[in-house]
Length: 428
Image (tube, rainbow, N blue to C red):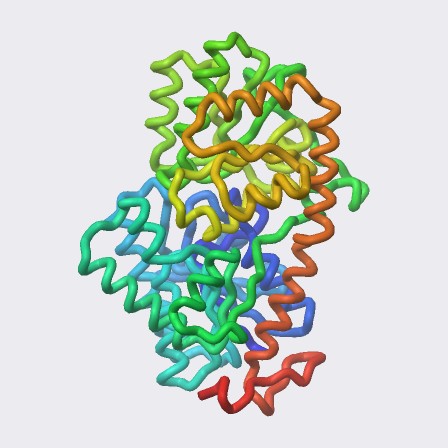
């Protein structure tokens, strides 16, 4: 089976971005399939290609994955209009490949929502099987966040969402809320699979591989400090002012032995740094993004992972954040500051703390509790790692992903090692 795989923000572990698509593509290759990954140049990411761009693209092979990288740079720090234009340019260039490449299945993953455009056209004009992966519900999320208020833009996004869902032969949702959101658009449940983000145990659980990452702490964090880390984008959706609010409470309480480390980049990072400096929050440490190997070393030294988002109801069940799965893969307890499926899981599995949103005192209380009872914290960490291994092992989830795509392969062209195919009803 030949898979044409579209992910604008693709990265290998050499970058500081999520590697879901890298791992899914590698698993497809391991099962004997051919994968062509189509992507842009994502800030903080690393596609593995180093050659020059020729006529707006460069190509190469990385670990058996054929990569086509467009010379379209993107950063979370870009303004709304610039990001939107980059999304549209990527979609337009992708359409050309959808009509000229040879493949059996076209797979596209958000964000952005425009990732579905080549799949829609390939399905209806080339009659190609189309599988669509939904990482966030659009336009629900930007509407609830107030990021997009123009009714015409929201209407257009709603139309594109409907077309993407109804055109896809099969869909993948990364969380319970996403699966429910897809179904509400009239998609039969049998066409939707929930495959959440996974845990890269071989990266973050060194004991399994016999190699330990080099532990490190940022400057300003002592070995005796309780170190809580956040690793991800510093943007509006992440609500990192909540961390600074908790830091202010801790400072008022004289807890200089608790350090909050924010690793990453994003549009709001300069504002957060300015606020921390203005309020003399020396218990908050900012650090540039790091690749997966360095991140694993940081987590070896960390005591707690912070899963923080803005208090937006659509986030409660409608997200599957990479950082949460990295934390538990590393055996880190998680401090979560919003309700939903992750908070429920943390409480059920006793692998961290779930505090109410917009409650700086409760956030600070949880950090103090973690510092006061290190034995209980270590037990939570063991529970977190057990959860990672038993329910979110990336290899197992990737195998589910491969099987789901194999079932979308056309009849008469079975996937390697399988006889799976689509029924006539599914093809129509």
